[in-house]
Image 1 (tube, helix red, strand yellow):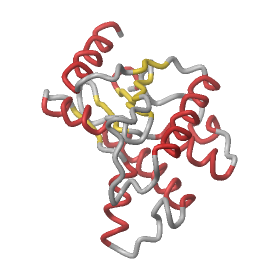
Image 2 (image 1 turned 60 degrees about the horizontal axis):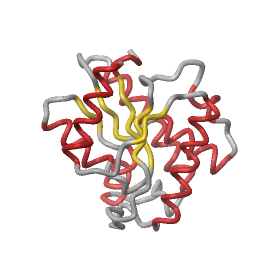
Image 3 (image 1 turned 45 degrees about the vertical axis):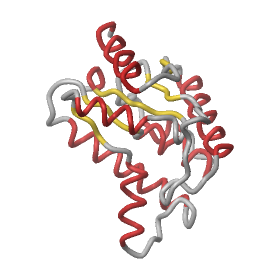
Length: 178
């Protein structure tokens, strides 16, 4: 399973969703970011599990959604690219409640390595209705994810700050090597 599931993680506003959209357009299976889906659902309803209202409830819901995404992806063939996922939710829970990332993830990392990391990129970062935090918060989030990867011994491939077509080529080259 993990050998064909690719996690794209990193800084909020670092171009992950744009990259996933381009990979989907190229014919690859993709899974949208849990956080964006949760925010859309919560804003359409009562809004209790929003990251700026109840960050713990948001992280717990992201964790459940990421696990469901992994379960559903097993039915797909070929590579599957995830816009954020279980690692991101585990890092958030660690930050908010001190729960060890390894405890949340369990004994086996569910994605292929290296983890694909979108670095902080101030020039493309934008706030919007679903991303209310600023760039400094995004930087801190990216640092927490990198620390978790290092602590877990996960190899990381950091994407170049490049146009989306170049990033797609970079990811496809990475796939060919692994």
